[in-house]
Image 1 (cartoon, helix red, strand yellow):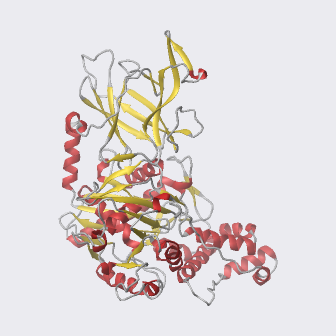
Image 2: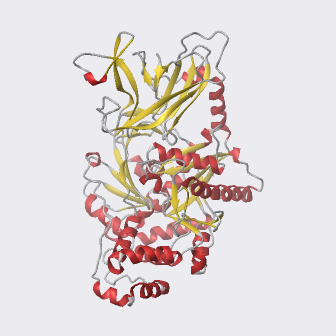
Image 3: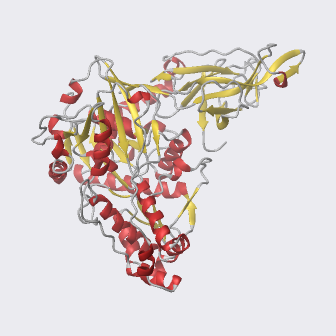
Length: 633
């Protein structure tokens, strides 16, 4: 097979499953991987959230104990600081200063004129999801309007957690912990596409968590999958059943939404004194009710996104099979913040709000902190209004900007309320479910709990873990200890390459006809590796063979295309776009007796949380450096 510009010159292609390929042909690499799998001492998971972040860890010798990161100084009254705000502060010259509460509080205390020079970032994670052409060069905008490369900000955040986690491990163990002892896990939303996942991996490399030479040291975990793994361990005293007809843990379903949630928080708070959660090596009572083929859904309501993942139970091992590709969207709790900002624009004018954010950035942060506190206090049945105090600088700047007081603007306003609602439960995959597990920081909202209870209580049992904001973090640790627990996933997109196939009259359009050396070819044919929503097992591989244009060619670069549809035929179809490149580096595989036609056999895995590629030079039996790049193509 010849390859030119990512196209194939004949039909010499094989598709199949060959789980022994790496072991047989890349023995050295597989031995290194196996060694790494067995040698790590501790798993550290980082839940990198839109609004808050944190880490947890567990020692390989004691996997039933999950330790949550130690408490931090700072915080807000009535808000747990088990995790910290995802906020970063850079000095005026662009150097890292602080993260979390320290960044937010320092920025708050700056003189208004000084604060304009500092670079403050918050709620920046969603940039990776909303940027359609994400690259390493993508920038983030600070509160003062200045821009910095996103990779620098994400790397700073990950480095912060790396340094603190290693220090905590060393303090606890009495000896210095080195990074080679650790397997790192970073959580991302399930709806994120491959470029965003690769971006997080590159940021982790930059932060020193792992390296391209040892990529297996870092695992990307999907947030609802992590939550699903932890929910398997739930005992009755660790959850609230919103659909219970009888008392659960001493609380009826009518008490659960209000008074019932309070004991849940108290239970979590007591655990937090030790920061150690025991995860028994047994199946929880809820899980024991599931039988072969039963389905359940995990609804992960975070700060930026709401993810839905449907799993089916495979017995007797209890492994999980993803039934439908992850769905959801940017419907997290920051959607409520955006609605509040719209309200402010409506009352005071969009031009004023934009100028206020630029001229008084620290005061804007104060206002949103005050709103966050009020937002958390909102509950069903509340009669008294929730008042939000405007900062003095807001009132003062508005008078200078408009020439009249804020009271003048408020008299023109009317009561405004709009809940952030997600109509995701009309999908066919929601039917026939046994349980719905509601997780994520936004799941702590009584208003959201009531909405889900009223809409779904008659369809399935709605379960909320007590420590709902830490469910993903603890599940990510369990996933790091056993990354093979999810056996089958669904491909979110159709992936493939553009190739040349022999032209068939009546099947191929005449505008695709290419005659080369007397042979009629059809151009731009979409050779599919995998189709959207196709079920793919962990370790399952797609095999293709490629040949360099000439024997001396050392680098083969093949364009990768994707589509949300599964019935595409050509790479020029409207739903198809170029999304990456497959790069084969043949350096070091040369031999004195190389054949004129070299065959490079390539295997791609689509059943993991990231797409992976491996390759071998058939003539020399040497491994070829292979990688798929979704960021720099």
